[in-house]
Length: 275
Image 1: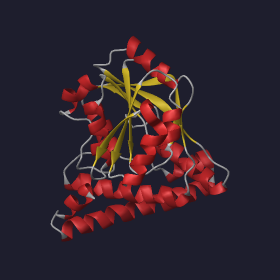
Image 2 (image 1 turned 60 degrees about the vertical axis):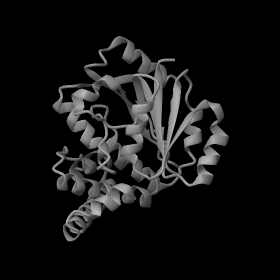
Image 3 (image 1 turned 180 degrees about the horizontal axis):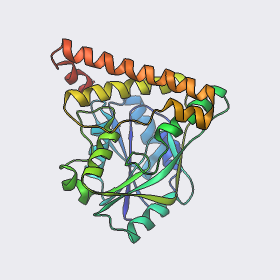
Image 4 (image 1 turned 90 degrees about the vertical axis):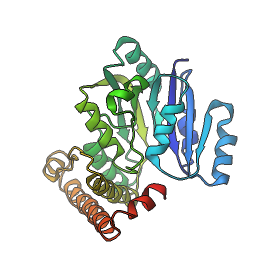
């Protein structure tokens, strides 16, 4: 065993299926952040000794992932999400990438497949998510594998607890600024559970909030891939219209957060980070 799989989770019961999809001898570390006690009990009962569990009292996804990386038993860390499952052989593919690569100069990125589900609406979300987030050339989790030795090159941390959203974009920016290569891992594929339109638009609103917080903190972020023209060309008019709606929701989140930060003279940020 040479790898730790870190899974942050608040109250998503699909974390049990995520753990069950692990088909390699790896440490599994679930970081429960602000989870209700009965949910934590359920996770302990269902995963048993298969996973180690840590608990953070307040929900903050960035803090949860950073805690998992910090307390992992191994230098090699694979970042996963609770609403995703591994394809067979994916973890072994990550191990081979570490073995054959230079982990003090690289991070390793697998491919995420957004499952369409049975509904037309969830299929539309899957197409939109694939355009926005399904790239193996970005240091976005999941699935992203890193060596903890990279911490100093990235400013002493991987994920900024002040950014409850857009934490992936921040890491991606710092990885590129540090000259660290992003290496696609052939054979590492995970599947994201189908998403309803409401859940996807809620995420987009929060991404807008995260972008506003980053601006307030002077944290530089790369521009997101949200091209309506590209969506029209690749997926048709329905997908392009959904991208328009998605972009408007993200802008609404950005404007809302900017206003709250201005009116509270920045004090609102403490509520968000600790909420």
